[in-house]
Image 1 (cartoon, rainbow, N blue to C red):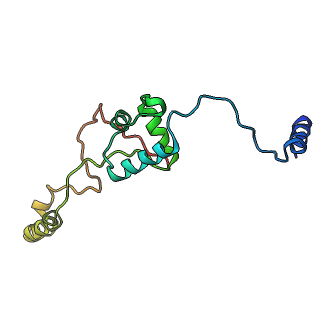
Image 2 (cartoon, rainbow, N blue to C red; image 1 turned 180 degrees about the vertical axis):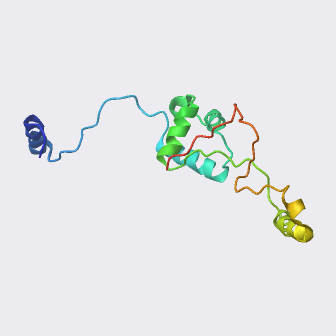
Image 3 (cartoon, rainbow, N blue to C red; image 1 turned 135 degrees about the vertical axis):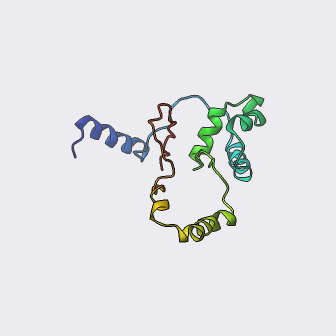
Length: 143
């Protein structure tokens, strides 16, 4: 089994004493929110996706009317399966944007070779003629 002998002995002894081998409850700091408050936090964030954890922590009071931290809210949302994502920041595309490449192609249909030599085609959305030193990096999300 590739386990120490004392581990097997203790598990066997615990099974004999308590009829189970599961871990016993450990001492630790009690939770500052109830399960009902946790469900309420999740429901509020599902209804308002742009609600921040800090705003939610200011609105929610824990047991004994104590304040809860934004990190507590994030942990509660994380255990329920909600993860923070960065919102998409970019242009909102319309139908007009979809028609523009077609209009451009129709306009340039009559071009000759000399005019086409001044056009650069690229698969990239960004064309840099020099190296940019302060390019922002966006962290990838874990699934």
